[in-house]
Length: 368
Image (tube, rainbow, N blue to C red):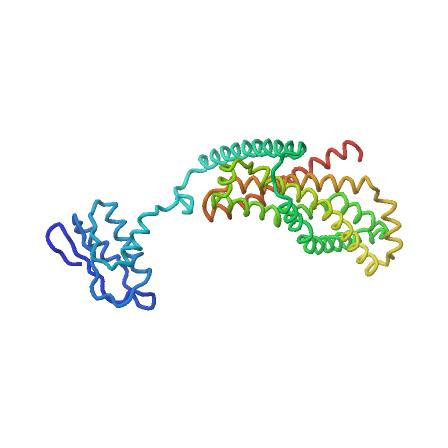
């Protein structure tokens, strides 16, 4: 850095400013500006042999410091490529939502902020459920506007594409449940009741619950990511501009697909879970397939299957609401899309567990 006069400095850039070269940091230049602040700084290029994005990023730090301290910067003598990059970087301001961190608050402020956020989430959930109800009413009256090909695509994604992972998890859950039950029942010579415990546990609880949790992590997160990306690209705003309801065109086919497919996946999970229990009973505890089947016929009836199917329908609605709501509320940045997907999975699991507890209590009171 060379002093032109008492109020101006000249900074001449020369040499190799590529990533392959060892470039000295600009801390010395910034410390010189702090110790002897000028009114104007002239940035010029000398014998530059090579440069890449490192040079504009270093110059931006100098220009940001000068802007914060009312120091005039003259960069007219830089090469055209560097000036274009600097102009582009300065023309687009940084989005506040893309920067993590920020000021730290006290624990009392964090509690208050959490309560306010919870109130906003509850209000947003109530409003979204109302909009879904209006869209469902339009569907029942034949006025809903969405493409059938979209519905078929979502059915394919939510149902057949999710069958392998649901089958594997359900089979393993049946194996584990049967093995744990058999170890306890064998102590009292009641191994035949393995079928009762596994079948009732799978059909009434574990089948719909495990299927819903898999769907929340797979389908619910996908819905949030898809709608969040569309919101980021202003596609949802474009639909509203054309007079098309986003709830009918985007949310309704996704919800219908999940409501149709999750009960079918639950039935498959029930059958494979029971099959896993039969494999453990016949191979490790001398309970034949015929005995296992006869015991299941005595223990499980259509009411038990109906309980699981009803739960799966409720879980499907909750997963679709959580995923689509978070996607529609997503901010306009890449980090916001990821946060929406995470929030959709968390909300879905919370809704599922709470709904499962309430439905189980209601069925117990009704003696079903």
